[in-house]
Image 1: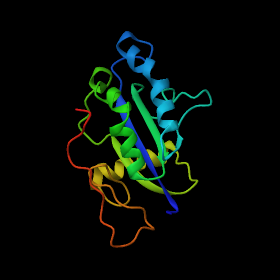
Image 2: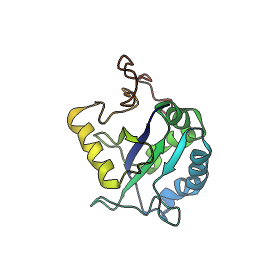
Image 3: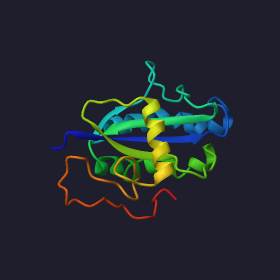
Length: 166
């Protein structure tokens, strides 16, 4: 068993305020999808306020930029939740609620078990990915790296280039 856990950060620019009509279906699904994540095998933790609201955390200058961050036991658990659960139904509708981004908006990286990364740490990882591409320090589902304590011969994990949500 690894001494590391996987962190994911994804960001998005919303098309309107969370209480606007354009965001109504997204907001209505948040509780259900967050509860699904928390019940999913491999889920460890998610970023949220004391009230359980991640949408209130706005670390960027652009107030329309939302962040979502969670910790998982491994890449396979996160991949299963993202692409093989009811989460994919919501992802298929993401363009209704979020602007298209021209640069990386999702990053994965390993942390020692029990570490809960700060938003600043997560943003730094996203910037590493944007600057260097996928490396063991910051990567994506398309080229996911094993935890640092994995056998040296273990190659990066690839899940293919097709996103089942499109």
